[in-house]
Image (cartoon, rainbow over the protein chains, first blue to last red):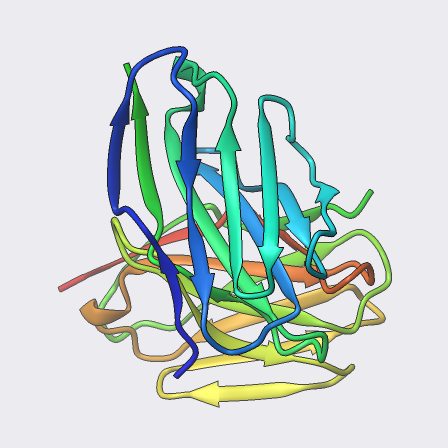
Length: 112
Length: 111
């Protein structure tokens, strides 16, 4: 089975901290994605990457950056965490053949 | 900009009944996906629909795609409590297999 592993299930951080969310996939997928999920707003795309060192902004990139130094790892960085970034963060990966996403288990981040 | 609309957003139904969730999208696409999410969990792939007229079935769920109408349906037959979850449709807008998701349908099946 394809596995997408997110390093933390729950995180609590303080306002202003720099936060790293890690995502690793083990099936050599080209594409990787970061979404956040909020009640009533559904899933919104933050950033995605279709190759090592490549990244593209999604619909809500403000306040976030990403890093993809290796094919299997895609990191989401909150440069200076704020309370409005409290959310569930979902990482996903996919091949380029259109088979859809495989999601990680999610990280519930609370910024206090 | 691709928009994906699901309805209804909330669905409460009795066990044994049938119902359909609808997913409309705004631009041409022939790739549509359905996912299930249990409370507090991540999304799990249910169906991948990759052409006009595609129909997939798994247990009490059946999904179909009409690309000309820009519509997919998820039909639930003889619902059981275990089907209670949030169901999302997602559409590939044709750019690097990036998916746009609907807001989800929260399904509650009551005994």
